Length: 354
Ligand code: HEM
Image (cartoon, helix red, strand yellow):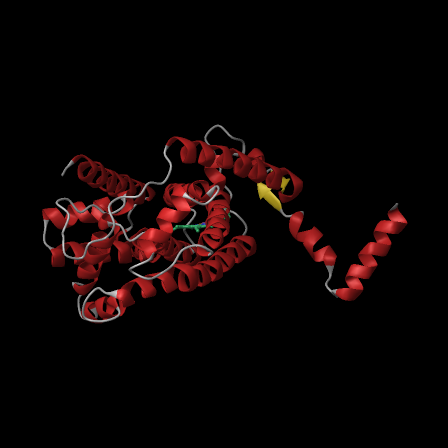
């Protein structure tokens, strides 16, 4: 049996001259004990949900037609006529929502455990870009359905882009594919959703995980834990990989239950001549939408951009504040709590309000 295995292995090695021991070595990488808790290993959940998005997205592409006169009808066919079409579409929709939740939770755990600090600042910045691509995935995907709310949501988003200082009009023109929303807009969102964003996200995830591997995962010491305990590790393969696979199976159950109980629905088809009474984006843009209602288009765009830039550069800003003003460790924690509470309040407020 061993001889047979060795034979197969040497044949593979001849056909594909790669040092397979490298894989074994990579799999044996010890990971810190705290990663056995799901809360600390949420990055794997984000990755898993992204893979589900790619697989279900490819399946949907076979039937979706990206033209204004056929887009809605093709989604209707997928939902009502194709065998298991409703299931694939619902999985795609729910995993996109869960992925956004998982990315936000992963970001919170990295922030509140200060795992973004030296030498991991660059990986934090890559993470923020991943958050941006994940949100843009959600927005462009929603627009592809071409129902009233998604069409008018895209119109508001183009107006928001228009209000970006200096380069806003150019961004809006690029998004619309012309001075007005039209057939080019849908084609552009389609290319972004199916080509540009997946490519950028895959490259970013690759760089993100490579950096995690190069730096190793942050060692954390919990209260009441002895120094020696906090440094105990377990191997990535098979222990950690098994936990990740089990989480994957559990997530598949959760997604299926959500798809059965709350299947993806379809609203009215898009009508560019009739503005709906209440335009609402997807929940993850509620905070920004509420900000818009509380201030003005220009102010809300500038505030959202400023917040995004502060979050992106936070590891460097914090470093500077520590050097210049000797701020304590708790400063970031308090600021993080206030910022997240603000996000929650605006989101819940928008979800309750008209
Ligand atoms: C598609 C989205 C993302 C994926 C697939 C992903 C994946 C991962 C994985 C697998 C890890 C290893 C350990 C863990 O699970 O915590 C990790 C760690 C890390 N992630 Fe992410 N991540 C994503 C988004 C983000 C975001 C939005 C941020 C922050 C803005 C971020 C910042 C970090 C940092 C700094 C680490 C190192 C943590 C440590 O050393 O303890 N990631 N990520």
